[in-house]
Length: 449
Image 1 (spheres, rainbow, N blue to C red):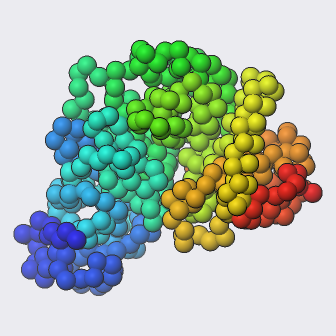
Image 2 (image 1 turned 30 degrees about the horizontal axis):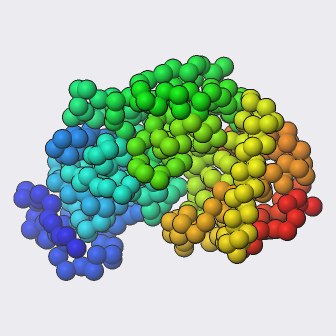
C-alpha cells in the first residue's frame, strides 16, 4: 500500500506527522480535532459533495479536481482515489490542507464552516485497459459502477446515492479528432455518469423534442447506416419520455455516441447527456432508447443502494419497450418483448438467475449482482409488465411519472417505487415484487393477482 505525506512544511510538526500514512491500519478514522487543536485529516464518508469541477490533461495526465463540499460540523472529507497519484490538496486560496493518502482512499482535513467549503486536489491518473477508468487506445472512459475513482476523486463504491454537479475541461485532444463530453452537468448526477470519448466522429443532429431538447448521434463515417437505423425513433422516444415522465435534468443537448469497446462488446452505458453505445449495438433501436431512459431512472433518480439495481435496469427495460410501442407501434414492441422472453427462458435454464432485488443495503457488491445474470433487467421488466396488466398501462405510466416527480435529482430505492405504485393505483404490488424480484426462481405464471 502506498504511503505519502502531504506538503505541510509551514505547519506544526505534530500535524505534519498526523498527515503522513505512518503505521496506521489504513482504515481506522483519525480523531477529530478539539477546538484548540490544529486541523488534521479525518475520515468522513458522509460529507456531501455539491460540485466537482475537473481539469484533465490527456497528454500529461496531470489533473485537478475542484470539489465543493456541503457545510458540516465535521472537519473531514473522504474520497475513493483508486490508483490516482495525489500531488497536493489545498483550499480555494491555495493554502495546503492536511490529508492522508491511504492507497485507494483519501482523507482530507477541512475547517468547520456554515458555508460550503472548496478543496482543490491535484493528481495524476493512469490510463487503464479493461473498461475500468480512462483508456487512451481507444480514447474513452468507462467508469460504471465505481471506477470513477481511477479518473477523479469520488465516492461511488461506498455511497452510490451520492450525487454531484460536474464541470469538465479536457486539454490535449488531438486536433484531428472530435472529443464528445459534457462541459457542464448542472443537476446532481451519480459519479459514474461523467465520461468522454474521442474518435473520428461525424456529428448528426436528429431533431428537437417538444420541450426543446436537441437529440444527436456521433458515429464514424463507416457507421452511418447503423447509426441511422438505430436512432430512427430516438427523437420521438425521448420526446415521449419528457412528456410522460417529466423534464430531463442534464442539459438541452443529448445523444448516442458510438464507443469502440472492442470485439464481442454489446450494449450501452448511461453516460448522460451523451450516452455510449458499443459500435456493434449502434443499429439497435432498443439499446439506443434504453440508454436514453437512464436519464430518468439510474441517473435522474439515483440508487439508494446497489441492491436497488433493478430500479435502474428493470424500470429502464420496461420503459424502453413502452416508449417504442408508443412512438413506433406494437409490432416493434412485440419484437422487443419476444427478445425479453428469450432472456427470461435463459434465466429459467439458469436455475432462475438469482434474486433481482436483494433484501439488504450496502452488503452486496454491485458486480456480484451484475455478473450473476440478467435478472435485475429481465425480471424487473416482467414485473412492470405484470403490474401494467393488473392496473392498466396508463395507470402505471401515471405512477412512474409520480415517482419521477417525487424523486428526480435524489436517490431512491425499489421499495419507494412499490409505495408509489400502491399510492397511485390503489393496488399493493408487494406480492408481485416478491414473486418477480425477491425470488431465486422465475414465476410460473407471468401475471400477478
